[in-house]
Image 1 (cartoon, rainbow, N blue to C red):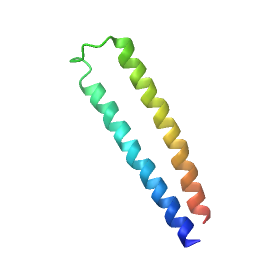
Image 2: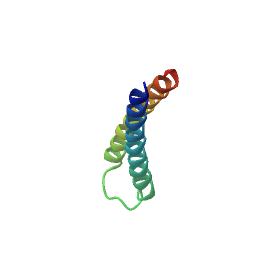
Image 3: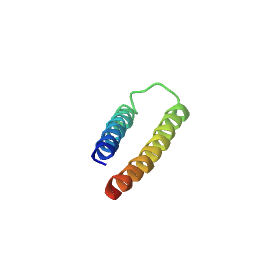
Image 4: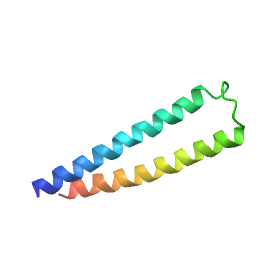
Length: 71
């Protein structure tokens, strides 16, 4: 049981780390929005993709939190 708990925590930590990277990417896009010479449609598409990734990560992290609390 202790091994399963440790593994779930490691996986959750990995997902949190990748979530931080996605958030930093979004912040960078928003901070440099005026400086970018890409069409707005491309920027919006990138932000929507990041939003979907964050929603998936949130679901995954919530599921892991629930599994960890049950162990």
